[in-house]
Length: 421
Ligand SMILES: CSCC[C@H](NC=O)C(=O)O
Ligand SMILES: [Zn+2]
Ligand SMILES: [Zn+2]
Image (cartoon, rainbow, N blue to C red; front, side):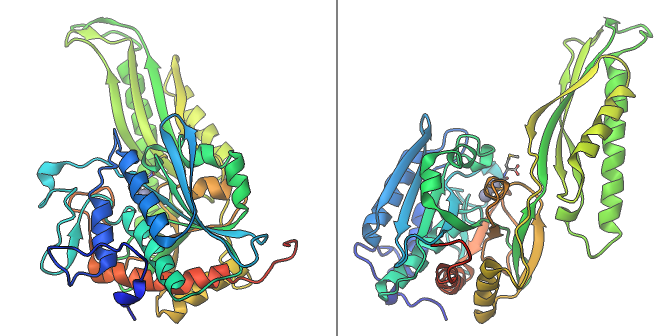
């Protein structure tokens, strides 16, 4: 059942003056979508004020931690009846990726809703929906007078879309993170076009690499030996031949998903100054996403071999090199997974377990040994994160709140585990 409009309670709820019949949770979602937390200059201040107002409405404490200059992590805490037990972390990032407005049907920051209830906006899937779904589920549970054993922290982090370095990556080293005493974390996933919900228990490792090729310069009219261009050609061939093999592996096995193979994409090529001057330096960059089952040391050795066999003067450097292959247990004997998956089952939500193909802040959580599941409760919807015309239907959004109404109590009621207070 959908959460009933009145039952969501709380003081200071704003109705949509243009459509008083709209569910207040939908109106709040649309309000959040209108805040331009878009890179390269996200309006984090307005988002923080919005979240602080919500904390006041919920009657819960709001804490801000400036992890880097002008990069603030915010926390809303709902204390449990046994606050010494490990807590549940409900994480969401506040930033969104840029748009190419000319390709959108509507203003990407107007949260336009069409006649079918599809709400268009950057962040409607990634991941402002999840932020508001967590909030609205907690608002309802609180309004019903519920309380659970474990503390629940809502965490709002900046800069996930640009790698999380000034967000979650720094925050997990902070004493305030340790003080949260996290036992289990939920974060974003992806939409599923079918009537199913994809859940992610691991992620591929992002490696961003630039290969620098140097060679002999000279006049553009001559057969100069040992040019940078010939080396870059060999590098591109090696990387893209590997790409082709992995693509065939994925295409040839219906059991595999994108997260089970390694992707390589050439994303940048730089060099040269003039048509008739052979450049001595050409750089080529690749975005590589490595399946967690791959041995990372052996994979780097392969890169070294490709570089050595491209000729002399070929070196590489990483802009991003994540080295953790931690995965979260989805065994029926795992108490967190059991609580999460049973609650979804009780809500008739069919789950499909996968490895996340890109990178989220869950990788930092897993890298310090904590369990994290990636889950955006979005079924029957095309995957449109980072795409033009990103949208989410209001009914799908509201059903997601209902799923959290089962999931949050289940996780916050997981009995004390060995070693816990
Ligand atoms: C590797 S850091 C960048 C993180 C980014 N996350 C979402 O898209 C991604 O490209 O996967
Ligand atoms: Zn995201
Ligand atoms: Zn994203």
